[in-house]
Image (cartoon, rainbow, N blue to C red; front, side, top):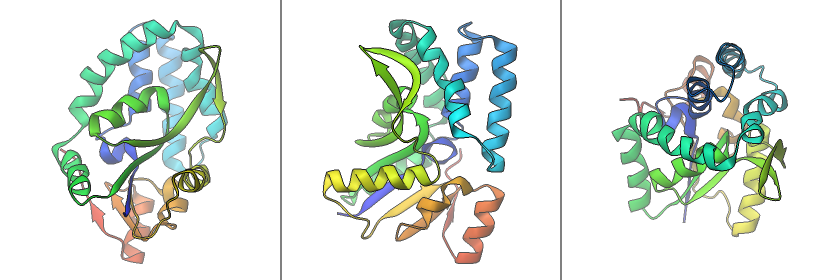
Length: 218
């Protein structure tokens, strides 16, 4: 069966779950609001510019998992999903996922955002497979570090290749939906790359190469 791969932030979601989670933590007093907002904005600009140091960003974004009780974070995440995420799961994105489900494709979300934030989002979309950056744990407690390779840029390709071997699958007939030029390494590996709400650099690449361009925004 063909593999339908989806980026998450600004692709299936009409927004960025990682960025919104940071803002949500600040509003609820789990991080210093001014400092977190300033750094969150900086990292988001660097991501858009293609200059993001992923290890620096992950040390920043995973720190709250280390500093607060897991139970409190999970309770806050449940409210975050209802208040911030469900409103940006657009009808067009849901319909796209459903079309691939009806076609019998294997569905996979691949995202640089950590699995603590994204695993329940994948469940809400009905996507059974997820490759996300993994927060490291020790004895059931988050350490604030990353386990393995972050699924960012070339790391998405590396993580996907390992997953394909584990699942006994390949990329024959595969498609990948993404909004970002940071995903060009993976877009260039699949049979059908599709730009969704693309940034300027990805739009230019898609137009030059004749890739389809979609919008899933509300």
